[in-house]
Image 1 (cartoon, one colour):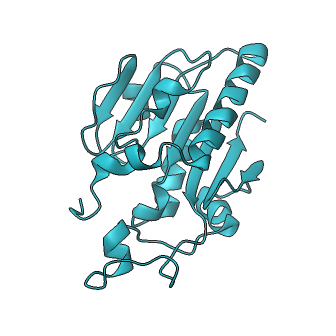
Image 2 (image 1 turned 45 degrees about the horizontal axis):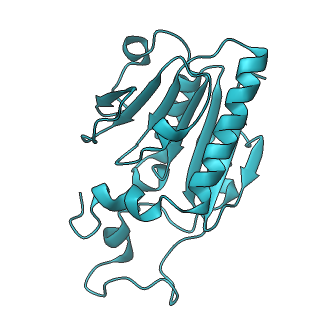
Length: 193
C-alpha cells in the first residue's frame, strides 16, 4: 500500500462521486429485473477497500459477499473474504451462481488486467458484471501530483489513459452498456443472454 494514497480513505473521499450513484442505480435496476425474471443469487463485490456500497445497493440478493486482498471494516449482513481474488476458489465461496459481480476502481491497479478480468468472468458465470475504471486519467497539467513521485506511484495505477477499448479488450467482449459518470467509465455485461 502506498502511504501517500491510503486505501482506507478511498470511499470516504469519493462516496458522492457520480459513478457510485451510476453503479448503485444500474445494480438496483438489475436487481429488479432479476426479481421479475429469474431466481436471485448473491451480490459479489471484488476489490472493495473501505467501500460500503454493497450494503447500500437494494435488491433481491440472497447474500452479499465482498472480497479484498486486505482487511476492511466489518459490514453488517456482508460476508467478507480477505484473500487474493486470483487465488480464491468460487466453488468454496459461492453456494449458488451470483446474480451480479461488480469491480470498481481495480483493473487499473493490477499487473495483468486481462487475467483479472477473465477471473471476474469465471465468477460471474451466467450473471451480470459491472466494472468501473478511470476514464482517460493520467498525468496532465490539470491533474497535478507530487513532483518527487511518479504519477503511477502516487495513485497506485499500473494502467492509465483508459477508454472503452480497454474494457472490451480486458473483459473479452463489448459491454452491453457503457456510461461515463463523471471522470469514470462504467461497463455493464449481461452474461445471462
